[in-house]
Amino acid sequence: MHNRLFCTRWNGLTKTGLDEARDDREIEGSIVNQLIRTLDFFEANTHKRWHKESTGRVEEPDYNILAIQEALVNAIIYGDYTELGSKVCLDIYDDRIEISSPGIAYDNQDIPKNVDFIAKSKRRNPI
Image (cartoon, rainbow, N blue to C red; front, side, top):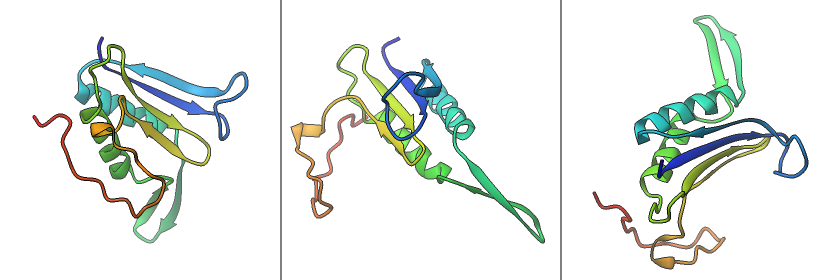
C-alpha cells in the first residue's frame, strides 16, 4: 500500500531503550478507514478522567478528540506522498502527542521556532 499510518504509544518521554513501545499499529486502507482506526488507537492509548455530577458522569479526556481529529486529517490530506512508502505517524508519549506528516514544508519554507512567523497559506493538494 502506498500510504500508511503508524501509531505508537511509547513508554515514558522518549523513544530510547528496549521495550520502549507499549502498543503500536500500522494502518493501511482508505484514508477514511485510516482516520477511524487511528482515532480508535488514540482513544485506547490516552487517559480519560471523570467525575460525577448531579446529571451523571462527566468525562475529562487528556486531549480534545476533535483537535486530534483535525490534526490527523490535516496530516493525512496535506502530506507529500510523492515518495513511495511515505507515512503519517501518531506518537503518544506520557507528556505529549506528536503527529508527523510526510514531506517537507511546502515550497521548502523554513519554519522558525518563534510564534511571530506568518507563513503564506498555500495548498499542496488543491483538490
